Image 1 (cartoon, rainbow, N blue to C red):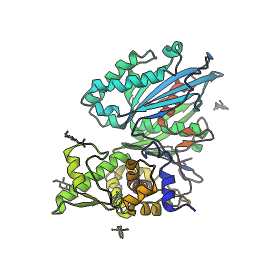
Image 2: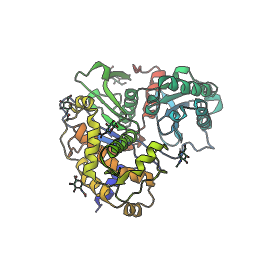
Image 3: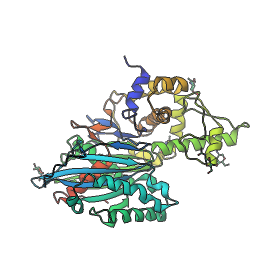
Image 4: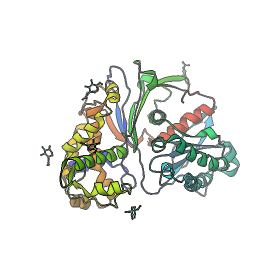
Amino acid sequence: MKSETDLLKAQILPDHHQSSPTYTFTESKFKPKPTKSIILLTFVSVAITLAIFFAFRSVIFNRRSSFRYSVVIDAGSSGTRAHVFRYWLESGKPVFDFGKENYASLKLNPGLSSYADNPEEASVSLKELVEFAKGRVPKRMLKNSDIRLMATAGMRLLQETVQEQILEVTRGVLRSSGFRFRDEWASVISGSDEGIYAWVVANHALGSLGGDPLQTTGIVTLGGASAQVTFVSSEPVPPELSRTITYGNVSYKIYSHSFLHLGQNEAHDKLWESLHNSAVNSTEDGIVTDPCTPKGYIFDQNSQKKNSTEESRLTASLQAAGNFTQCRSATFAMLQEGNASFYYTSKFFELHEKGWLSEMIPAGKRFCKEEWSKLKDKYPTTNEEYLLGYCFSSAYIISMLHDSLGFALDDGRIEFASKAGAKDIPLDWALGAFILKTSDYSGKSRKMLG
Ligand SMILES: *[C@@H]1O[C@H](CO)[C@@H](O)[C@H](O)[C@H]1NC(C)=O
Ligand SMILES: *[C@@H]1O[C@H](CO)[C@@H](O)[C@H](O)[C@H]1NC(C)=O
Ligand SMILES: *[C@@H]1O[C@H](CO)[C@@H](O)[C@H](O)[C@H]1NC(C)=O
Ligand SMILES: *[C@@H]1O[C@H](CO)[C@@H](O)[C@H](O)[C@H]1NC(C)=O
Ligand SMILES: *[C@@H]1O[C@H](CO)[C@@H](O)[C@H](O)[C@H]1NC(C)=O
């Protein structure tokens, strides 16, 4: 039998060998009075170090003239990933396949937003990504293949003038890339766009895209810097949260709400900050306990946190005291500040069936209170930095899904997945952006996004 810690690991570590935990939660078949919904809890991988996903066998290119190519560059908070897609048309409709033959991606760190002080330098890693993409597209096809760059929460957090400076640098690179490119194709997309693209790929994977809107699957995505809630609603929602997209001949009215700063890395940083404040304000010796880090962990300045004197003082005054219950309260208190927006969302998620969410609690409890040295022994192959995050993650998931969004702990329709559908399609919003943009371009469907 699996131990609870193994369960936790299984649930929050699908790609642990090369990714930090970033989560996508998927709600499903949302109906105003939900009857039988499926909720998918999904992982999106955010690699901290360079991660290469192989795709096409580099030597063999099938030169069938019917293949088309498209590139989507996801400029995220922790890194930039180029996705290269190959597709074809059947009866005038694009056919998507995300198997190794037809899809490749490469991620380089750090993210574009880290070039705020030196926008010019953003071109270096971007050029490398463009070269990667060019290596997978036949030369003669370049000028007919779109390349788009979409930046997300990391860039959203920067001042607009800085965003624009960085984007302009990327446009320079993309204009001279040989691919088909228009300046407006390099942009900072909104959180709700991101949510909608994630919704598109999830529903494509599950075969529900193009079908009855009320049979679609809703999603909750917990990324590094932001979190998104996206689902089809047949109930009226505030116009600013409502978007309509058309796929095939079906129109979907989608509720999409993005919570900037509530992504898991941002939230973890924010918690540290508040712990620091209370250390400064309340105790004489300046020592404060961090319930979200397993006991026995020694904080040091070489941690993954950004290097600043502020950070150093913080780490020096923190003591790891892994306690799931306290960590959950602390993260909930933090989420409460955004309560007004969650309140509305939570009304949509009145779902009551058995599920794993309740199992996350004992699993998280065991993990949090375990000695750090024992955890390291138990998971020798897991990156320490990721291992360190799981106590916080487990509490944050409960805090967000149950305490804030109101999912029942015993809801059986919540599932974890990094991939979905019979073909194991990665649930990455960039795939959804490609699907929607390509369907749009083919003229077989229109979208009304943006
Ligand atoms: C939409 O398209 C599908 C297949 O492409 C077709 O079966 C269906 O009848 C169409 N629906 C409408 C309302 O046109
Ligand atoms: C600590 O003090 C700072 C100002 O010095 C204040 O902004 C912060 O809210 C205080 N934190 C707590 C927990 O009282
Ligand atoms: C942090 O930054 C300071 C100055 O910017 C530098 O002297 C120090 O070596 C850095 N520490 C680490 C751990 O990178
Ligand atoms: C964690 O904190 C709670 C609340 O402060 C306390 O009741 C509980 O005993 C603590 N658990 C452990 C394992 O220390
Ligand atoms: C959250 O906000 C709603 C509506 O603004 C309010 O009714 C509710 O009491 C708040 N909940 C908490 C726990 O503060």
